[in-house]
Image 1: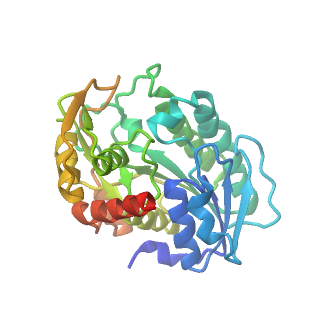
Image 2: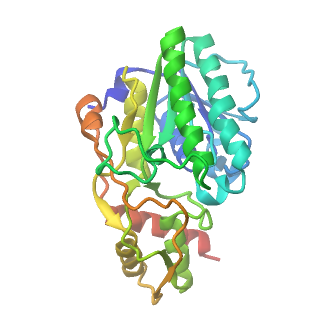
Length: 320
């Protein structure tokens, strides 16, 4: 049984609740009987991601920027801080907002959790490992990050958020946890957000060449969003401070991924190689020993199944 079931949340705040992962979190929390306050400034989150939830009596939307103090009428017992531009297309366009969300936003949400005696969970990222020299990456690895490179606004925002969360727990005794999410994919991703899975699916469905960067040998680990959400709520329901890796330990190269998506979409698209971005990691794969041991969690959805579901969702959005 998932340790998430060991706590019964009455009311949860989900920042970035209209985003990709955040909207799936809102949906699952409501299904588990938890009232949800979704906070989003819609800078990258999309109203359509939560449109099906708006009539739910236990769902509230607060349009606000978490870099400013947020005042709520209700008292949460769980705060999930998932607000942040997360795709390269977004954080490269919104560098200062990304840094402020990871710093000021984290501080404000920690203060909200402390004031209400709530459990706080920070969404961090595998990007804290940078271009790793350890493989697979375990939580005790400090990373290899360029602090002034183009990706630094996202990497360092998350690294600072982790430091702030750790200091908050040590100083005030706030009940905190940190999850490091590896590449998550699934329905509600945006086709133009710059990440490999939605980019390849969009290109394959349009019959365009799939743009693989470099020689395509760089690897990622892909975790279907339902599995990621299950892991997040398991971490929230535990007393684990973390950080804890949540991701699939099965690697796939970008060239293999492109060919698999061409196969699953039955596309006639070809592969076109383009320049690799600056500081693009050569490998990315989590060691999930901690999650398996402390949370009894590991991914369940095979890549082919998860990609087929994601492709079906994209096809539906293309239908007239």
